[in-house]
Length: 224
Image 1 (spheres, rainbow, N blue to C red):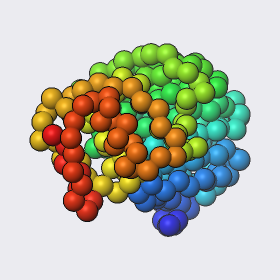
Image 2: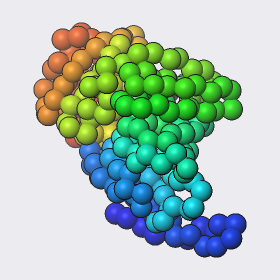
Image 3: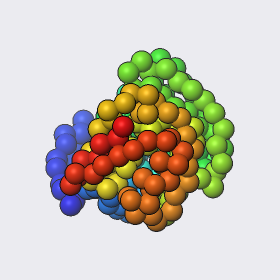
């Protein structure tokens, strides 16, 4: 659902729009500068109906893939969970869920600047940064640009991620809650690629990698 709200600007009132997504839902948003945003499930994007003359600013809670129209005279800035992303024209993914342990920025094309109170980083195509939401610590790494935002095509790619972080993604996609009776299992690190699979098939694949048992009671999945 798209809601409208008013926010007071220094010289005039600008109309702001807010787009929310539900569990497992994706939405495509075209901004006034022709930039495109694909919003992942359980996310929110706030943006002006028409950008100001000197800047382009949006706010993101959750995850989104951005294709930003190039305009050197008007930088594009995303305000996320404790950090900002500044670009001129590029395509990249931002994941910034408030209940996750990590936020991340991954660049597919072009170059972006990631800015937080602790440090700044310039990322180019094929690079990413992970930011710990509790401490603000950063980890910079390399990625396969073809994997950036594959979620929008129905593919889930997990590289050396804990079972806990993987199940958070599944919770948002399938509207379920995971309960771990064994902490050792939630800390297991695995890699997995899945495309357009049912929750049952995904759980079977996870079982092979992480060696656990589970039972599902309606929307709750208990793992031990």
